[in-house]
View (cartoon, rainbow, N blue to C red):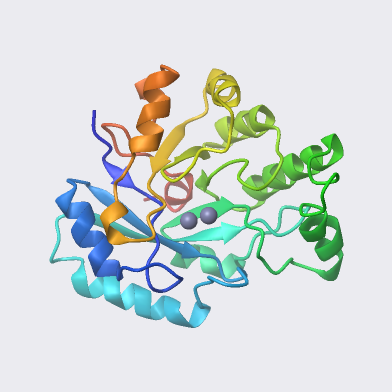
Length: 252
Ligand SMILES: [Zn+2]
Ligand SMILES: [Zn+2]
């Protein structure tokens, strides 16, 4: 069984080691048909890609795209920023993105002073961050985000944040958003992945590579798929090319 695409990879435009071309070369070597370049969103405090650099990333891709037999998508790993489901892109960014990922990261600039207390701090204060109340608010935040923006993939679900995995999976299934089986770590429990699978949600395996050698490294997702006996049909990039909702909405 082979994965046909890796849709979560980082480059020197945020804090990883490879250039876009290094990532693409490695993807070709691994036999992938598609790769997405998805550096950290604009409001990550430490590793953000700069809006200013986006045109250079586009140029880099334009320059190399005919050299390699692979589709190259330019996307972003956006950050969840508040209980209201705001993420760090503007509406006008959407047309510039071939694919949109969304995840929770600790070191982000919240979307408002209010969100600093109600979301940023609330998710980091001990005793509070694992409460049922927090879990409910975070799940709702993700649900609002995927309803408001054409997000394609929820990356590393539950990494650093409490959520109700099944509630989120149900909404993802409804909207055609994929839940990621991350190549560096899976933070959901086995029971949660199995319960999410029951909803019929699509899972996508990605490397989350921060160095070119790791592009296409799906060993952790593959172990989980084997161990939990997940239905290969439900893994949207296993032996097939996924349909992404943001591209579908653009008629692509
Ligand atoms: Zn991440
Ligand atoms: Zn990442």
